Image (cartoon, rainbow, N blue to C red):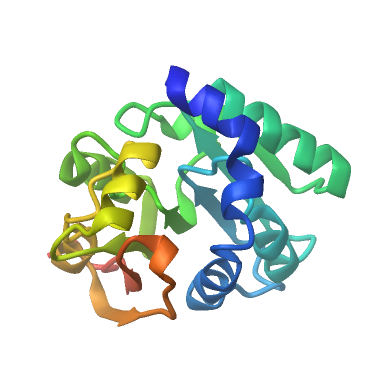
Length: 207
């Protein structure tokens, strides 16, 4: 995490504009109802770049827990919360494999995983644990980058983000969800591959 603590110092300058449209698409795909009092887990939340869009779509009745392992990222996220007066957002420091229901205040209605699946050390195990925090009938959205083969820019993305964008990062969600959908998003060369959005719902009946 020392690298991400350092990365947090220039993360917003490097990435906020680059992924703005994809973050908006993720918010839309979550199907948030401002009247329903929904709870969203945003992991990894990084510096909180998704908070504004999520909070606006949730309305005052909804709430967001932003979780990240990097203290540096969370310091930036907390500053964003204070600066934007996002009273329905809080952060917790937690590992994706170990975050608990107690830390997030119980099961969540929506799971937002933005640029996380390509960076988690054990992605299927990580997603299985996140899936366990989502209530039956809840919805998950994954946004990430995929490259079948790495060019120069893809190698740079992997290096800087400590990522592996050759992973088929939508597959853990596809294997568990109903009403699964996946689509490519407008992508730039600087993304290192193709941005995609995957979404699906957690079955109400475990069988």
